[in-house]
Length: 251
Picture 1: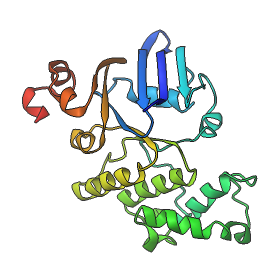
Picture 2: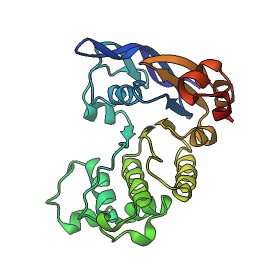
Picture 3: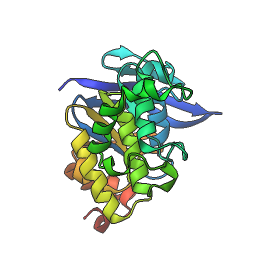
Picture 4: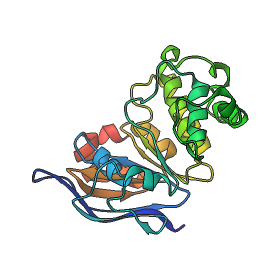
């Protein structure tokens, strides 16, 4: 498949420190591509450049064949890119349904308007209910976010991202802080929503990476250490040393 996300010699420096060093990344359209590596490897910095939250110091980023280097987040989102964040970014007092309806409204001329009338938002209700059902939240549609369990908040963030109908979905540590039961549900959910779109995820849990990723890029100290299918990457001595710590950790 052609590349839908690519970077060339991408670099980000903070006061002379290179957090990302000349990274060449190729993400095939329709794939699930994982970025892994130890803390401080540059994963989130790379993510933030791909989505316009950070401007590269050097290099080039292309989304669907278009140069988006240095473009703001709203421009990149307009090309069909949506993301989640490592820390939940929801509004405690709003319901799950409110969040999804507002996200659906954002694609129209109304934008993100919190002073919208209920009548305006009602036209998005059917689609909002479909999206909530797709992430298993149909029974808590009218529950305020502050009352939702952590795993359900992460599922809601995914529904909000899906409301933008993205071609590319970037997930920053989607299972962080979850128990085993929530992790299994999230893996199944990501696999389901990946149908027909490209997913790029930062993830520390290697069992999640093994379950989901078609291809894995391992970063170390801001550079690409190795890239390939999970089974190939997990057996690479450089990965075992840099990320997994010991051969037994890769099994």
